[in-house]
Length: 444
Image 1 (tube, rainbow, N blue to C red):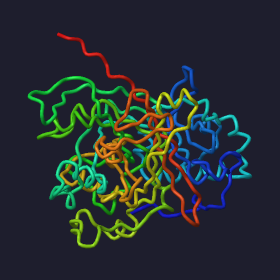
Image 2 (tube, rainbow, N blue to C red):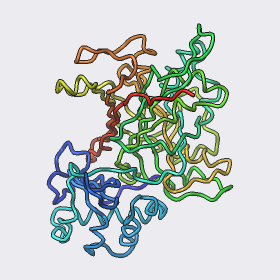
Image 3 (cartoon, rainbow, N blue to C red):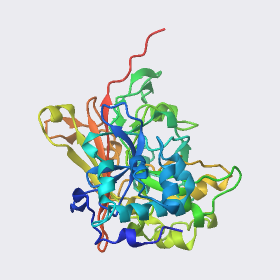
């Protein structure tokens, strides 16, 4: 079951926070995403905030101002913490009550304006932390066009393995190396071995890449041994955030057989600060179906609600700026623009249902990565591996440089938004990270 539309989605709503009414803002009053922040350069305690235009509403300060009551107050009090986990654990009724209260408090003409004005912090003055304590992280592989394009580079005659259209493929990633957007990421060291090499070599990756993903954050968990039915799966998802699961393409082929990625993926993943709630995404749902001729999902991965509105209509972009471009004052270059609705072969609900089908227990704050989201057409690639055909067709940058894969000093920024007729445009903010040189490894 997906979240229904309600008064918080009314596209005519405006806010007394003037910047929230700009046509191109990611954060109108119809969005109200969550993050964890403090004032930049301060020693303040981390706290939960809600984006409204160019401001962050400090929820702890709002609670102290006495503007909440009832279920919304209980939810807001759970958010008076340094992470979102306690709020995530409360479930959809509590989240919805808090969202409704925030919407009414921040609307044009709200009586609480005077009491809340002091609880606003400019986003330009905020520093962010991970929105949740991520106990576990699972990366899926739901981008069928990405899987096909990558498969063709290694298996031209059989790009998709036989299980792909039957089971949501995933692996357990490393939660400890997930960092919040804006945090630099070091190029990894690892073993590599080319077809003509007699033995592997060890050193920095020379084929570092980004992966354009959405990350879904779990709300209430499930007991060990108790699967979550697909019809209730989305009740266990708090929201979604942009996610860059960096990848070392030259390390992975040598190490991943037979158990999967290791050093090629565990050196860093970047999660955007802002979590857009599943309720905010309600106007942007889309029908879901596998292409004609493909197998229908098995019964545990299928239900009427998932077929009618399991998809998400989310525009996705990747931008790149090299160190030389920054020094010259040149703007980032857009590398791709696609849409999750076209890219994803499985839905968020199916990921939850499959993950728990064997009895695995999820916990509040767990992260489910979508896998690389690439569209079917040119310019819709979610990675350089596809965009440059494994580095054989480098892209030209405005600085005169070229890129087959990422260089040290490159900044990658992911962006996403939703828009359609009859709804207010909402966005996900930015998810950025800059590549730093590989760490030195001391000889024995």
